Amino acid sequence: MPEVRILKERERQILRKGSGDQDMACEQKSLAGSVSQRACVFCGSRVVLYPIADALHLVHGPVGCAAYTWDIRGSLSSGAQLHRLSFSTDIQEKEVIFGGGEKLYAALSELIDAYHPKAAFVYSTCIVGLIGDDVNAICKRVAREKEIPVLPVHSEGFKGTKKDGYQAACDALARLVGTRSPEGISPFSINILGDFNLAGEIWMIRKYYEDMGIQVVATVTGDGRVDDICKSHGARLNVVQCSGSMTKLAEHMKQRYGIPYIKVSYFGVEDMADALYKVAEHFPENPKILTRAKDIVRQEVQALMPELKRYAQALQGKKAAIYVGGSFKAFSLVRALRLLGMKTVLAGSQTGNKSDYEQLKELCDEGTIIIDDANPLELSKFVKEKDVDLLIGGVKERPIAYKLGLGFCDHNHERKEALAGFTGMLNFAREVYSSVMSPVWRFAPRRGGEYRSSLSIGREDHGQRISEPFCCHS
Image (cartoon, rainbow, N blue to C red; front, side, top):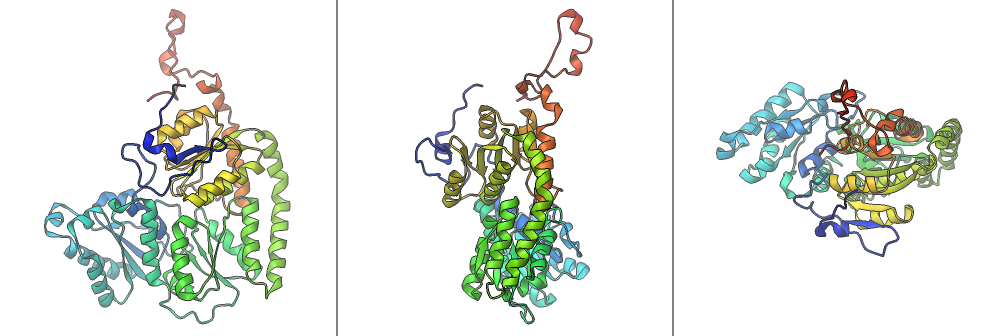
């Protein structure tokens, strides 16, 4: 493979474990020209708030911004479906010149009258930041007239990266928290923060906790409800799954309401069990909670381990590359793959911080490549160098895997398969096995196979056989 030179400005965001003590440079703006995998500030705020199912979500900007983020998560709802409708003020040239305030006011008023939401979120996009619409004032006016919370989300895309969008979303949520009475909430209660109910995962997680004797006050934001979020300050503990998106809200609730928080992960057997034990240990005054947690873990592990062992035998020694949004998910995936007998040779994220990468470095084996905010060329180079069998990522990484002729597992917010919880671990193992062990990879040129295109048919006899490797087109 030809050597791919890494841009000088990117060198400190890539390291190999065991090749020096270089500190990772991270939490920087994406390098122009490197085709970053990150999304914009607006997208970050939208993916966090979108699953609140009984709220109105109005994008103040060009219609393309609303189209880009419509139904961007596979977030399911147990009731209201308002979140699955995408609304935009559809800013045009006229509004760019004269301002879009009147159009925003009219759109908000009409939509609230038509759909009667519990609250409304108004997302500012790049163009709104440039023309200077006073979104705050308009939201206050409509909130006063319609008597519901109308919350501005300051998510102008040019302000930073997707991670800044997470903070804008937390700022908006913080204005909802504490606006309803917490009366009647159990002393053994939690909020689940940072799970977005992909493929119904929050329902599984919630049931684990409820079977332990824990009341779940609010799920923020998967299958979220405005009223629950408003009284969430009555819970005794915040359990944060996606630390990148929800830590700021957890910190706000700790400072203002004295609610402690813990960071957990629901992916993989070890981390799922640890998430249950950590919550149980927070309520030592009720030892029955820990006893029930141990019973749940014992029953679930006994049910799934025999099948996991069969997959692990087949996958033993296979190599995987991980590139995901949040680094906390990467930790869980390294451990889950190890349980399946696989070795992680590349691990990276879009939004990790220095502490995250230090932890990732400790978790990974010698020689593992650790990368922050990768671009497609870098991912392709390292995947080929390490002779990877599986790439775990999101929708933007899928074409890289298939063009290079290797298995792929979607672990991002577009997926439709539940991968969290004990059941999710079994689903993950099945997906990894079916992808890595598929016979189709025998025909990939990188595995010594050959692809016969339709152009080769009928030309073999003339010594003109054309065989184009499908993975090498640029």
